[in-house]
Image (cartoon, rainbow, N blue to C red):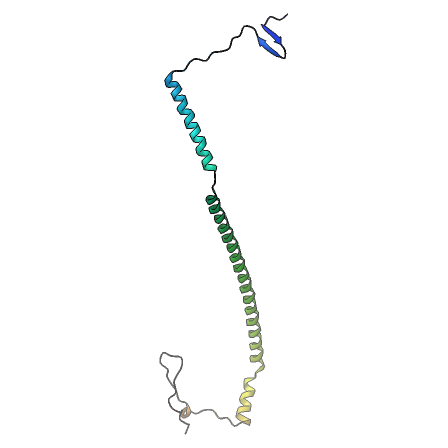
Length: 159
């Protein structure tokens, strides 16, 4: 048989000859220090619990902050969508302007090429009796620093 000083008593194994360990008595100062540590731990635990506790006013304040943040985010997204829509609209209008300018240039070229100035001059001189202006019929006007002129009297007729 094994001699390790163990024996079985029911469902537990115990060592023979072991005695309970006695704790040493702490000094009065040590006991007071332990009490202070325990009271500090308890105070810290109470402070943590108070910090986690939310009263109705605090919950209402947080709810209002969340609602304001959600409304601000919604408005920001809405403004960004409006800006994007306007930018798309501007791009569409710019392309329309470009198309209209190209169309106008094409029509202008077609009109200028379709008009024969020599034929108009021939009809004006031969059929309508137009004469070229003489030197005595030309009146020159000077305009000072403006691009228009006020007429205060009738232009004199040629001689």
